Length: 472
Ligand SMILES: NC(=O)C1=CN([C@@H]2O[C@H](COP(=O)(O)OP(=O)(O)OC[C@H]3O[C@@H](n4cnc5c(N)ncnc54)[C@H](OP(=O)(O)O)[C@@H]3O)[C@@H](O)[C@H]2O)C=CC1
Ligand SMILES: O=C1O[C@H](COP(=O)(O)O)[C@@H](O)[C@H](O)[C@H]1O
Image (cartoon, rainbow, N blue to C red):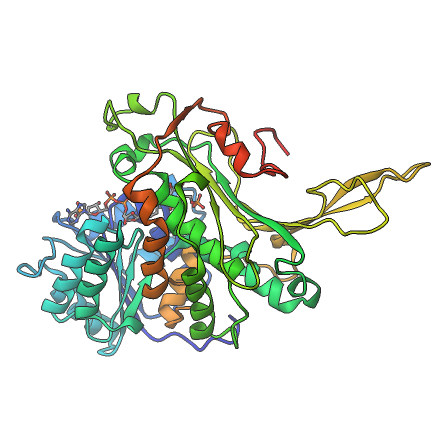
């Protein structure tokens, strides 16, 4: 990132600026960028929404958000930031521009930058993506702009195709940034950096050496804050076909020619084409006991709050290696672990623990890479034991981790699409998930605080899931 050119003046339009995602992620991330001096000094953030919120009311909201989410700042930081906040209300549809076009014109004047880079961030319900894009075209706010779409970008093959066509009617692919914040995590980026920078890792990144891959994101979190959204979405759409598939693609991809944006994006998104459509016999769905009592959840809801799946990647590199994916709400622990479990060598040693040699990427927080290895148990005989080496990424010299949303927003400002998804990859995602979405197996009940339905354990045999309900 040190080699990146200076950014020019920027106008960042935040749709859904007073919504949940904006307050949790986008506003704190943008503030982090401003505070770290990573923005051009000439920028303006225009929040938008359907209500008539004054600039000052919006500034109060933003300040509350920074307090609520514990974003450290002093008065000087805040005053410099607040001066650059505006709000444009009155809605924004193809028939009604509200006050946004005028606010953008004014921002260009205030910045003395007729050519300021316009970025629209759609932190909106996905059902509004197509219409908002049409409105950008209708009110001349699409020309030269970059547009960030939140997930999910479509909820089925048909919905994806319809949305993709609507968006491409107004924008070129180069203007489109479909965000998946798991790709912005420091450890996720190490799935390609560590691999391609270290021959000893790249050499074993294949079926000859890897017995199985686990992508495991259990969460203790409930869904109370967004029960309506969640009940209409479920774990398969919320996590599996989005974040977990993208992480699987990061692992499965063939080496790109370069780590330039187009090559990296192409390598990751094209390997999704080799994901075998999921067999529902390889999927276990669950629903935690008590889910139907949550306010906003239907009394007879069949929505899954847990999914475990065995995915196969039909490439020469990975044929026959199961990719085990698991995530769910109200589980016994919160973890975000990607593990490559290595095969035991044939040779003189017997009784080697089957999951002794594992390379793990911890995606949570600032990230960590761990290696476990089978070693001699120090002592008088030759018993085998498993030892661990941990590398917290914040201990790497000069580490200055960016939160995933900060990193991805910065990439948008720089016009770097390497960590964003592409329509060919997404189109195939819907093919892979089609049978599961059309005819899902019933969600099996599981107790809150457990690790999901017991049937999910069988998917991961013989090693079993490496993340268990017990503390590490
Ligand atoms: N919340 C989260 O933790 C996460 C959310 N996401 C994604 O981010 C996006 C936004 O999610 P979230 O913030 O939770 O959503 P919200 O339900 O909070 O909606 C965001 C804002 O959108 C506006 N809005 C709501 N309905 C409509 C509508 N029918 N037409 C136009 N504007 C509307 C509202 O602003 P106003 O009333 O001011 O117009 C609202 O504040 C979604 O795509 C979601 O999937 C992704 C990851 C995590
Ligand atoms: O997108 C989502 O991600 C979160 C988990 O993300 P993280 O920020 O904790 O890494 C998940 O809880 C949520 O259901 C999902 O919508």
